[in-house]
Image (cartoon, rainbow, N blue to C red; front, side, top):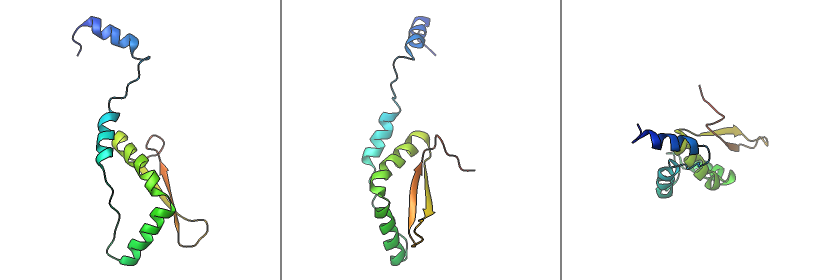
Amino acid sequence: MWASQSIRRKLERGAGRHRINLARRPVDAVLDRLKLVGVTVTDDDATAWLAEQWTRNEMVLKARQVHRAAGMYGDAYLLVWPSEADDGQVDIFYDSPLTTRVF
């Protein structure tokens, strides 16, 4: 619905030149207030292992990107694979929901 045909035509002509992502503002507002305290399980050894993997994979840096994608697109993906070193470690990779789907 448009207030008038004149406004509709003007907006249609200028749509390609002015890309303003208004949806990003509320996502960023929520993201700025989000505080991830930690991930724990009932077993202390498992909690320590999770903390080690979190640090090893630099998830402090990746978490914001993952949470932003989840807010913008409704989902985001972290793939967890055993490390190539075969030392009981895992590698965590972020995959964009624009290129990944889980069925």
